Image 1 (cartoon, rainbow, N blue to C red):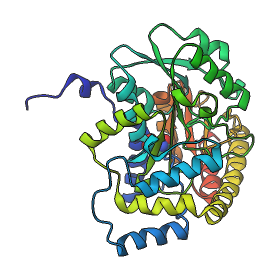
Image 2: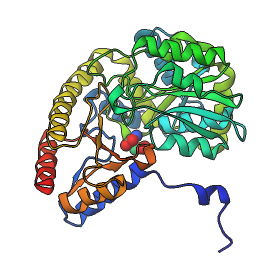
Image 3: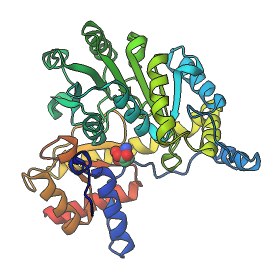
Length: 384
Ligand code: GLU
């Protein structure tokens, strides 16, 4: 074989995906594993969205859409951003992509030159560092601590800025920590980015999944330097349909679309049509979100209480559907600890390693309450 590029040899596969695949494989082999790996809602999507997908087939939406996404969906995104977030965008400032992941990828490729630095709070979602590195950029982590609710201080972020800093990456509610940044913190971080002429990339995929606190759209404080990243996966339980969207300054969105037009063209046309219904049928979608939120909250409370009771320190997250638990009492190496949990307790979690979270592991509670109880019983028996 002629060999692989250095760039790809350096690239690790996504560990969230890898661990989830491993748990699914074990289950297929008949091994009864409780999978708390993937950030994937276990609910069926709302019926009105499924109906819109059927309608898309009846309408014969089999062709390409514009690479940037159908006008219908980009308009619906603009209306959503105005209605829910108080932000005014035109459809030519919106790009629809294959998941929030592709929006981010396009964004990093569009703004980073080799050696440019991206500031991110850690623990951070596993794909951020990988995508930054693929764009030739350098990850600069700002460590946040469980005892601070995984919130950074503005001073710590300011201290990490150098002449090479290009992007401040925000993610509230956070994957994996579930931290929800207070409005004042978001404002001060965005103002700091403005002072240093940085891009602000704000991953808002978990916007609707907040149990305490409020969601603060970062673009409110500096619309002209902010890329908003959002999508349909988490709030509407549409992970597999792969619809994400970005909104930002027109030139940035155009550049991202040039790249996308060469790589994947448009996101799936049927799914785009269905997501219009999720965004536009406001009351039906709100009812779905409220129902799922109530279920997630109950699971969160049971899981956090249980893990802490078992001596695995776990702060209560305010949003998303993950908790970060300290596994050092099982093994100081979080990879080994997670492996023991998998092999000996039959509970699958994602070790903190690729989240840049040593000693910890991420448990997703986007799984049934029964599974949460079973996982806790098994961990108790294992530790017992
Ligand atoms: N975002 C989800 C997670 O963190 C799905 C998997 C992925 O894309 O990383 O589990």
